[in-house]
Length: 480
Image (tube, rainbow, N blue to C red):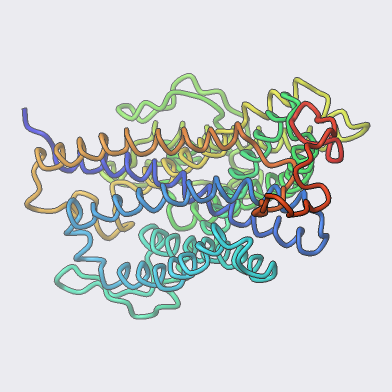
């Protein structure tokens, strides 16, 4: 049986990047959250913020490590499977990825050690500065990675040489290419939402179990306010991103909306559900809302939107992938908005803390941010196909010329085996940290006691405290 190296390379890259994207997205939001906790701790001197920061820093360390491992594996593929693409775009993407290392990874690496190990070894202000610097490092990493990826979607500031290589004519235009601002805002907000729903889920789970009640209430209260801002904001950013996609990648937008034909005689409907039939270029069993497609995509009642019939058939993306992944992403986004609004409404009278139904729903919402990010990635990257650089270089032309299907199958098998070991262990360790939960009090470091004849005991030394302990194991002075 002949194995197609192009198809296998695409599947392998999709497999690797699907694992990788989850951890950077989580750590971006978590780094920002930890920095905010440390700032609040310094400003208010309320140790509940410090206890929450200690808890999430441990989870951040594990997640950051898994993100680094998966990122290194992903980078190998550019040389192994996509050398033609790397050779053609190296003058553009190479410096952008180098800037990411110089400005982001070095910044993170410099201060990460302080964040993980320096709480009792450096002044509190220095520790807070380290948390802020790590957060800025993760955001800087997002900046450069999304700039490089956005250039592949909306290339600008380049010249295409006769030998097929791209060279930069304007770094400003290349970095701030037409889709970059929208994609950066969309992805960073998605990362913050993903982390927010993880924090919401953990706090809700702890409240259901009656553990770390004060800490969990603080986490949930803070997160609900953030989600109330971020979830509607993401809807607004998504609308702007959609308008940008319509301008620069109209074939992708047509696939997202499931429109095979251009509306010339009547306003375009909004197709909610249906079955894309690519062979006959029809949407079967469509459930749609009249006029809504034109209203959303053009902000007018009768606006015209290009359908796939405006583009050569060989330039069409695979419509079902893009159509359904887009609806999954949007549907989960609406769930996020609903959870944020309902949670904040239920603050009245403290109902949100007592509602087992809401706490259960919040617990089950833990993965929705990750699923939405994966759905958005499928929408974005499949929607660009069959181009690896939109309109200029086809994906089929980017694969390594000497690559065989057996080569890809071999490396793909090794990746699967490695991931089957590394990631379950990491997730298991994170699960253990979540079960343990945030500390409910911080004990001072133990002192070395000297005992023996003639050595007086300091007040309280050697005395077993008889103070009652509550259900969570903390002393009565910190009982919830």
